Length: 608
Image (tube, rainbow, N blue to C red; front, side, top):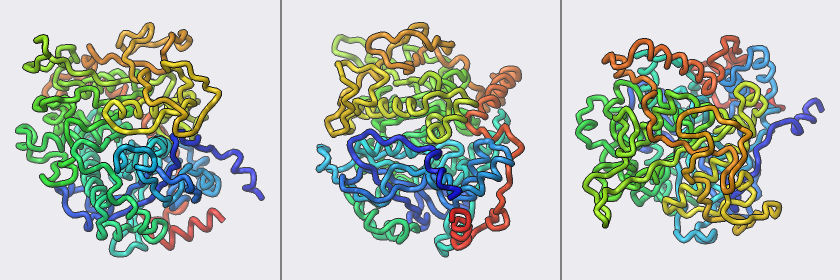
């Protein structure tokens, strides 16, 4: 009875607004079954599997139970998230004995549901558009369930890996030789300062992350081929994942035609996506080929090498640029994203790039200016100029040089970094009080609108944007929002206003304070602001190479370091707190290994 009131106070996710129900499946595959895609990082000896969750459109008759947002072992996961969020040891110790409370948080998906056939959903193609999404610091395969589920509800299959580079709050790796045994990878607390030691640690994590994505890409392709060895090797089978759940993806994923897959990420995940896409696309570039110790060099006939092209759609949420600015990555940094490839006959340019910032990251000058350079045609230039978008030698019919499209870069007013993930919805009181982030559902709703329209403009078939998601405005037609139709036709298929590159009053592209009470002009979207990157770059964060060469002064590095340390509270709230609890179950869950029976025993003892 003491817990009877808890469901009424447990935070809940909003329902997805796409026309399709959403299924989810948990997968963990031994790396030995996948084979070699690239050199294994020296620091990845402890990683024997790749783990990921798949979100996908499900049949209308799906009614299976939702899944818990908190992964097992729940008591240890509660402690890990308490640390990540910076809760005091006293609060953490109390919460660690209440996993039943957090157990009520359910992701509004249906476990192991039947995949909706693309044709029955009116998809002109026989395969679903496929997305790979990389999480940020403190994330997991579940931590971006709302954005992943939202995309799935609009007709996409989304793969969310859980990185084992010690950036996740906590991750459990099964032993392929003895699936009843596992070991834990805990979150590694790395300072946010500009030193060679810190850059080296982040580079190590990037190497592991890109390697994992290469392996995941191979697994995705083989799942689509109905590969028995891969599907039967799933360590989550028979429980909680039946074999039939994975077999249903056979010949249903649009992953074989080059440039078709969509890549996205948040924070460290965005940096990971940039590095993996560049490393793959430019693997044979002279500056990269001579690199003795590349971040990631996939073998020539690997799935990821066949997939990445200049047409690969890429969306980046609050990209954290620090890991990209290491000296070791300098050759890669100077090359543009493939969308601007100088060797491509018809590059898509900025049409293939979408970047969405929280207001906190928009106002972080060093990171914002670095982002502007990374999504420009010439990252090596100190300033993003209009001439950088002109393609020499390519002529229009009238004889003028062809100008590449600028990337779509926006931010949401009054939003915090954690608003881009599930944390903003689950812990709105903390995000608002500590980080001044308001209306957590708004940024997720605007993100979904922007990504959907971005994909439409890249030729991806996705479902309509629901009328109810247009509450911030910007529609080009008179819509009676109170109707709130939820059917397949209950929305619009052209939401052009969301990607309109139009400056709001008082926003000239510089990073300035804006009046939040400014009146909304006709056709504008409330709290949604375009960022003009032309002229940005001069205040980019210092690179490790710049510090080594003396190009960046000690004073500049010190100032940037202070800003980085201030922002660490946005990315890793627990970094600012020394008073955090050690796990009450440390003896039961030693870092070197745990058994499945021990995990189940503790979960049963603390949730009964």
